[in-house]
Length: 440
Image 1 (cartoon, rainbow, N blue to C red):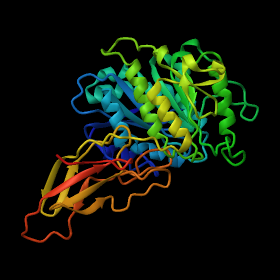
Image 2: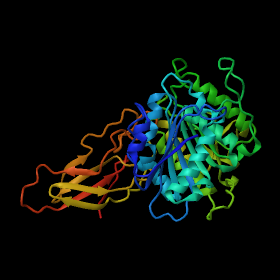
Image 3: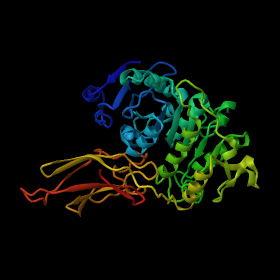
Image 4: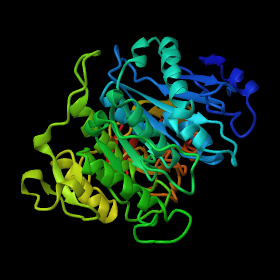
């Protein structure tokens, strides 16, 4: 397998690729990228793949890795090219001294997605090779050893769930949006080999997250089989004692919708509970005494000690805070947030052009910026934030929960500034809950 290592050399990757994968966002520190060509060797990946990783500033030793895995199809695969640039997912990674990694499998539209979303078909091997190569490239060789928090959409959910079965000792937690791994033979897809359920996978927190229009309330259509597959997987896992839950998105079909406002806090809780303080130490088990439970497809959670239903079919939730968020999410996805976002920094004015830096709010992300001149608001960036898949956010949102292209820039040109007049500007970060914080 041939490796192309890239650091500030995006032209090398462009020359080796064909549309639609030939123009990924350029990388320079804190972003790094590797790309592998397709292999024709048995058991290796038959598609080219690129991995982009973001390293939080100032981290001395990484404690973990957050993986954001796109779904099947050419469009979703291409959208993976921007996953590591997502400010909201970066906020989660930064809090826990983790890197953020986004793969992009170069799958042609009509090719068999199982050839990458089943990690036994070479993608597990390529992923682990990427961690080794990226670790050397970015100066963090520990990247090859740290635990993983996995998020996957559709085929990416198949992949993340499969990685739990193959590498449970490395997985902090896994959020499976729509897709789940196969655990019994499927007569319609006999070529897909089902997984056995290893005992150590039962200790890994898992959340199944289908859209309600994927077979829960809408029983027909392209994605109607998603819920039956999720339910089968959930019951098999939970019946064996797995720490697994179900959070049905009440608004969506197969698109990701507002799931990140539940997925990120849930992964945050799992990372907080399981990551060790020092590298090399084993992950901690989830604290059993804090768990809350809910009936499958119900909307009310209770502490485990007070739960009166059958635990073997109950939705497992890690703690009270997540249970409260889950209750609101399955109702209307409008999880409340009372904390303002981090303040913008490094505001600079060059003529009538403003630039700044900002981080996203862990709970509610980043919706927009408002621009104030001499005490009066004059603009918002973007001018008209839109998102057909959920709450409007600053970076936009593609189908597989990644930023739109071209990547949004933190800049504003004040076309109405009067020449020769000195103005005072402030920039406010606004999260998706409507809370704002002025620049320092």
